[in-house]
Amino acid sequence: EYDKFNCFHLLDIDPDTEPTLIKNLDPTGEYKLTDYDFLFKRDQFVKRIPASLMYTYGTAENAKGETIVTNAEFRAENYFTGAMYSVVTGEEPVVYFLEGHGEHTLDEMTRLKANLPNYNYKAQTLNLMNTDAVPEDACMIICARPTTDISEAEFKKLNDYLDKGGNLSLLMN
Image (cartoon, rainbow, N blue to C red):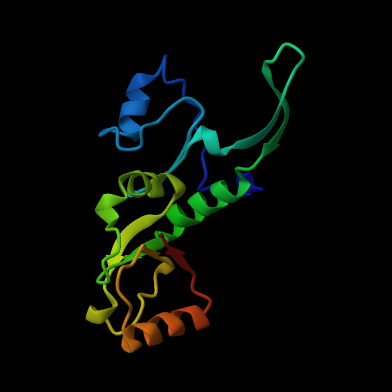
């Protein structure tokens, strides 16, 4: 289906024989490209889909006690579509991490913070006491282990966001 759009061009690059092309696509090494990864790029907009996301595998143990793959399911279509949409439109979904209530900070969640760009998300902090509403670009708000309650004003802002179809994830002890 994507072939009918002249703005998509597939480059199949072997990183072992064409390291210069890899360096041109990812000059700073920011995307940590590995074999079979996909990189979607348009101007300054870049999205990476790691090869590890492409398939899910079912496994079983054989008579020798070895783990064998019994089936594989291709799962990358949504990732491809999301990455293409993001680079074509220049829009990047943002996951906001709520702060101001003793939550784990975004910087404390180093693995999550590092992985979000690999899944085509941007991560930012949000203090609802310093804003009139949840930002329009929010695709999710994460509240990670709060230690104090939110105010009535913050509750109203979160509720308005949720009423418009927003997503909220509460990570509790």
